[in-house]
Length: 334
Image 1: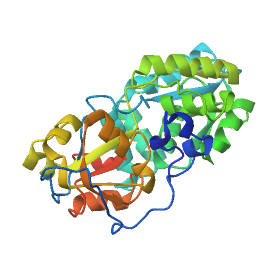
Image 2: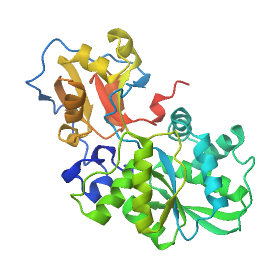
Image 3: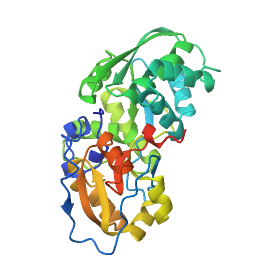
């Protein structure tokens, strides 16, 4: 399970620090469908298919969880930040999807995938030498974080540092280590980290500070980072956040590419939404689809958070739409 939970971001008083750090709970069974009495119309029955696509969040339900380098402020200097910013400049969401595919589906190691990406994208060109010294890059306990950690290693090595990547675990473990300077750099996610620091400093009922606008989120993140002794680099275009997926065959049959189109064409009894159990309560899942888009579904199928159960449910035609992460390798087209 990933080290951060997209469903929890910005959930006002419902947000708890642990919810941002742990998984979404035990996966349920695909047979735990709960009828949604408010559904009206025929809806859109599931359509099996292997290729998955993410529907565009055209009304910006989700907050801006762009990849961003987090640095212990005592270790930060212009050359180090510039080297990390080279990684941000090279990454967008389609490239992050391909990197995740290389590891999770093609079975390459994060180190190999990162090195191939760095070579193909000329990552180290123009990186200026810094003062040098030892740098430890912390990585979370999921493949994407480890890939990003290896990319940071490559860029910082080119800047003259002696770098190692250390897999630490979830944010509960690596964030304190970063603040203490036991590790110096971590790949982070802007909105999730902003809310983690916000609730840590201001209490679990703190008003959310992240936003669908990345500039607003980063401004708030940096303000909280200053209090914690953390410096943040430039966010990448790459995002890893909640995404609602359908099969390509479903999108083609019903003519939907956006969540607005899904709501307009597929609200009704035949539509089945799949996701983790808490999707039924969390504001960035089923309630958010209802409030922001007006989507009404016939059934909710309790599965997992962006995991194999949800992806299998989409591919075998058990669910119409499912929650998975926007940078998942399942979105790769080749």
